[in-house]
Amino acid sequence: MNKNWIPVSERLPENDEVVLVTCKTLKGILSVNRAYYSKEIGGWHGSGSMSGVIAWMPMPEPYKGEES
Image (cartoon, rainbow, N blue to C red; front, side, top):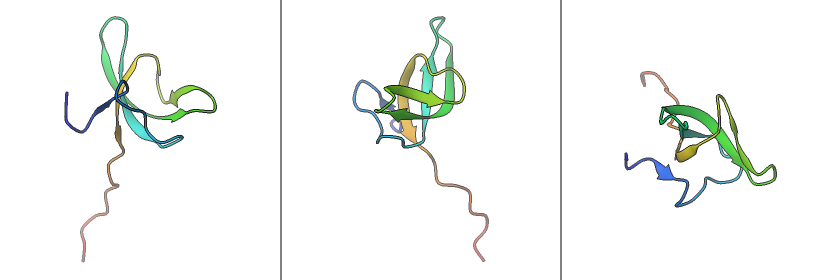
């Protein structure tokens, strides 16, 4: 696994922090989605299916264009 990915078994992101997640379906298909973990609601929420979240990583810095 890439060193930037953090397994959910190790730790979860800060509450309501938007992150990238890797999800794995029952068929073993992997996908990457944007999501957040809510302690109040008790689970992952985001784009696409949030079943099978196995790892997460912080969002990258946005593109800022060329510096002048």
